[in-house]
Length: 275
Ligand SMILES: [Zn+2]
Ligand SMILES: [Zn+2]
Ligand SMILES: [Zn+2]
Image (cartoon, rainbow, N blue to C red):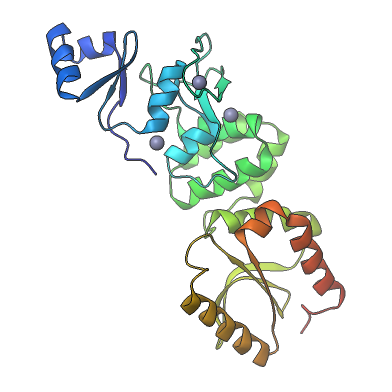
């Protein structure tokens, strides 16, 4: 998440309105507190690189790029920059431009302000798809970045797939990976519970039925030896109590879901989840 400074990018008119005349702008450029991005557009020194590149392109962060900036979970890599150009905005090409333009009418107070969280989520649904929308939505709910009013707005400004995902979403998902796994297993209608505390094992990511544990290791902390040792002890304790553990990592869930799905369904076929 980036530290969001108040209005990191401003037009000349906005600078004037804030009492910064020609001399003050020149002084700011001199001492580095202002950076000129293109004609009539200035960034203050606290603004992050993504915000500056969006402004160079002619707008502000949108969609998955805005979600990342706000600290929401977003699947996949961040190579493309999604830029909100507003309804009649003009796109400018610049160095290393790999921007995806958004021209919807989402509102914002400032010329370079980011759309609100509900609007950002709506952009993700329409631009990237319902799965990414769902993951970002659960993250916004978990972090209390969307209000009940915001959710209601989203419900009435989205399509049937979006409303279905909103109805399925929860406010207690522990990570984007957990949301993604729940979403991808959903069509199978499994008896799935999350964050279940088991005697002598601890809290497991998922429990399917009574006996099948599914653990999904996040990106951090799972490559070092002490952690690996802890996982093995956990799995051994679980086995002693009659549980079966399947363990996957981030790369498998995101890039090789077919293998993950087959492993889980194979265990279910053999009834390993039954008491
Ligand atoms: Zn987009
Ligand atoms: Zn940022
Ligand atoms: Zn660009």
